Amino acid sequence: MPKSKPIPCTKEEINALIKASMENDFYYTLFMTAKTTGRRLGEYLSVQVKDINFDKNVMMTIILKRGNPTKKEAILTEEVSRLLQQYIKRNALKLDDYVFRGKKTGRRQIQNMIKTYAKKAGIPHNIMFHNFRHYFITELVRQGWDYSQIAKLTGHTSIGTLVHYDSSVASDIKDKALAALKNI
Image (cartoon, rainbow, N blue to C red):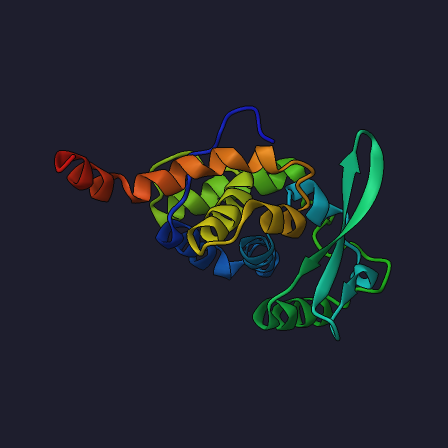
């Protein structure tokens, strides 16, 4: 988890950020994948072509738990699966090649490019890669998923970690709650 809690992004902001990145094949593919899988940046950096099973639409990522690497499965949407296949083909990546890592695309460069694309998209607050994870989880909570399901899907080891996502969902019902409280 990042040192400071990210300001949640709206669906419109996430989509504007992705649209701003369309000029760059690498970032567009990474951001689309992050929007729909909700993994940590370090997990994407560990993905090799051989870790993606396009027949099953899954991608294996590695999570470090107490220093021990643990493989976790991320489900890919049909759209992202096709996007990844096209990206791999266009860039002539081999099975052992890393999908989201290159000579000039490390952790720091990715974080810097997020800020560049956020500015281009007109997003007024600070954005970091973790915003994709936060967005993904928040959207699942809004759709009624329970925390145990979300924890399995995102690789969280503790359901308690997910509770802080309630704050952004609670803001959605603020006006309705205030109206109801007037009648109490």
